[in-house]
Length: 127
Image (tube, rainbow, N blue to C red):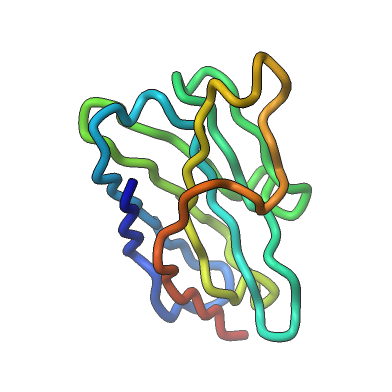
């Protein structure tokens, strides 16, 4: 599985960005997907995750009401729409994939131990 994230950049506080992640895999719908971020000096944390079907999503408290995760299995792509951005959102954002069958019906994982990772895209929010 190869993941390629794009869409990061510099934006003023209150602005919006849309991150995209393209997956190079035969069966994209076999994987739960997630967006994670890591700011300098901080641990990597989950931002939003989505199930293989798109039917389940979960968000970090900091993202609820501002960010929306979605996926298009036909295009093998997952996106993160980020609105009302804050300086605290500044970080490198990573998309990640995890075999959905490994969950065995348990809730989506919000921990940064997904199996496959993209290269990251920088998001900088200026005040």
